[in-house]
Image 1 (cartoon, rainbow, N blue to C red):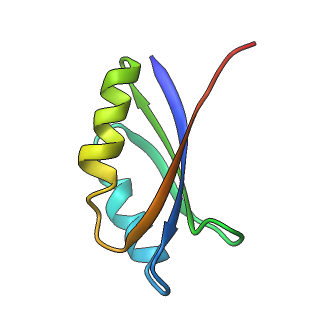
Image 2: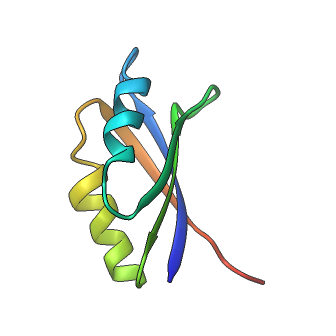
Length: 77
């Protein structure tokens, strides 16, 4: 299982709606609207890196109001 944090920038005033919509996507474990340089932080999981990429590109990035994403896979050192 691969876990990642996805940092999301949204259009002004869209953070809450984006977080709520993303929270309903299968593979997303949490979606929180936050303050700072990013508007929403998502924790997601997938069986492998390829499926994680598909989740981000095909599902999350298609949510209306998102302007940019940054995916940070979790590593265990």
